[in-house]
Image 1 (cartoon, one colour):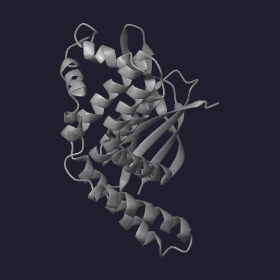
Image 2 (cartoon, helix red, strand yellow):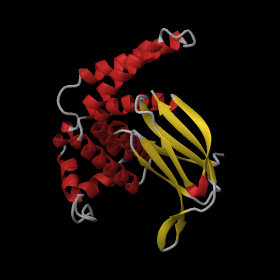
Image 3 (cartoon, helix red, strand yellow):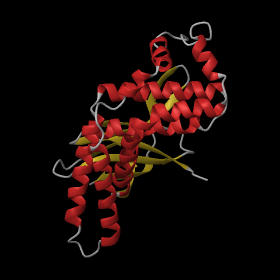
Length: 255
């Protein structure tokens, strides 16, 4: 049983977007396995968020840049005698294959959604709170109550073009999270500040605390400095920084 809570803080906009995409796909895949009308509604709602992020960001370009960056970093590691060269080559091959798949993708990812009148109708009505009720969208209501296999196939078809990006992001984030150093730290009166060496490629910070501690973690900052505060929830009041000294684990992901 996990007895700790981790709070991640991305240190650049690219990783920030990647983590948002990761969370959305994890939620989408969870509801995809469900069999209720509310699972289908949740899956559609999450897919709408995924489409919105893709419209606002050139994720294909961002993922390719990050894959190229990691490939360069890994290639430089090959000269290190302490590195498992077979594992390194396998990872480089995986990165190369993902890059080729992305380069071969033509057009803007997400444009396929326009081919579905149903999805477009749901998109338009979703801007209205509660706007996808049965009397608003009878076609959607019909789709929700159909055989699970049919709606599952539709959800797979709508989400498939995004999957190559998601798989690449999952690989990138996994590699970044595994390239870390962890230290035991103490936050006097719930406050801790860390100075970051801007010459190092910091990607992510993570703060891990025991679940029994009655605090949540607020992290703020940028590439030069980050501030960590341990906050105590208060009913009907703004949370306050705790007065106790708080031990925690600080993980820095640098790659």
